[in-house]
Amino acid sequence: MKREKRLTKRERKESSGGGDHQHEHQHIHCIACGRHMDSDEFSASPPTAKIIACQHGSKFPVCASCVRQGQKLLDEHDRTGQPVKTVGAWH
Image 1: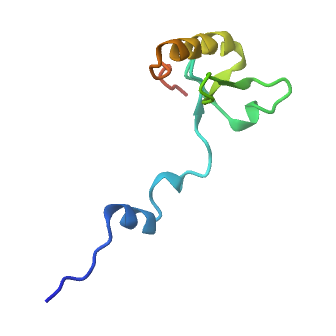
Image 2 (image 1 turned 30 degrees about the vertical axis):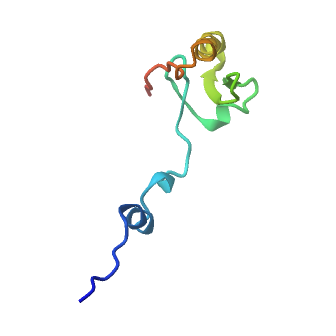
């Protein structure tokens, strides 16, 4: 007697509504200070958050007050080829 085909772990997770797409909102943190930022901070007038990019084109969020420190982190990343050394997130 042949066994019935079973779903893979990924297929079970997707069919139950789990997985990476269960959050409706983005969870954004500054790479320099770790502060939680809302997406509307990027379009506020004046903006309290910005997006900066490394030489490879990857984009990273920073607070408006942390742009200089965030750019230093990206410069180190560009120079060494190591992952960006981000600060731990806090709320």
